[in-house]
Image (cartoon, rainbow, N blue to C red; front, top):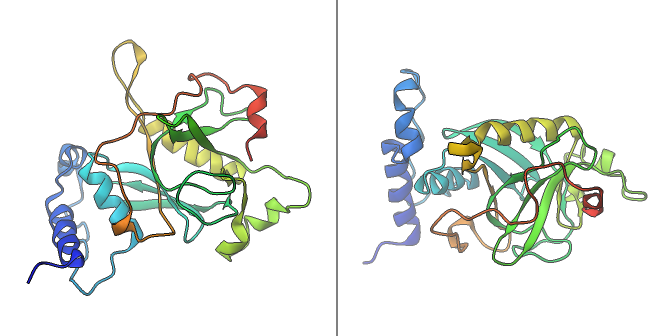
Length: 238
C-alpha cells in the first residue's frame, strides 16, 4: 500500500529534525549545547504542530531563523535554530482567508523590507508578493476610533484580536523586539547590499499546513520602498 501523506511527512520531519540538514544549522552545529533536548519523534498517528511544520519547511529552504505568524493563536513567534525564543500577541485581519484581499492577512512565506528609522510613528515592516505588487505590513498598533485596539490586543481570546484590514498590529514594545530580531537576522554582502533577507512565514487557516501550496524557493521582497524612512502616507496602512 502506498505511504499516506502523514507517513511521508513524519519521515521527512524526523529526518530533518535528526539530521539538521540546512546549511545554517550545519554552520552552527558545533555551537549547540551537548545537553540539548532531543526533538520529539513523529509517528503516522501524530498531528504535526504548525510550528514544527514551519521550522522544518524553512530548514528545507536553508532558513533557521525567521518570524512565524500563527493565525490560529493570533501571535508572532520568533524562531531561532528550531526553538521558539519569544512570542507576542498580534492583531490580524478581521476576515479568515489565505489569499490577499481586504481584511485578510494572507498566508505564505515573505521576505521582509524594514524601514530605515524604526523610531517613526509610521514605521513598518513591509511584506507581500513581488510579482503581484501587493503588500501588507507589520506595524505598531494604531488606536482607531471605535475599534478599541489597545485593549483587544491584550485579550486572551485570539478571535477578539481579528480587527485589521489585513496588516499585523503589535504593541509598540513588542514591535520594537520583532523589528530588532528582523534587523539582526539580515546579512550583508559587498557594497552593503543585503545578501540574505529576514523571512516571515504566515500560517494558512483555510487549509492544513501540509496541504498549503508552499513555494519551493525563497521569494524576493516586494518592491515598494527602499531602505529609508517610510513616507507619511504609509500611516494609511491599518
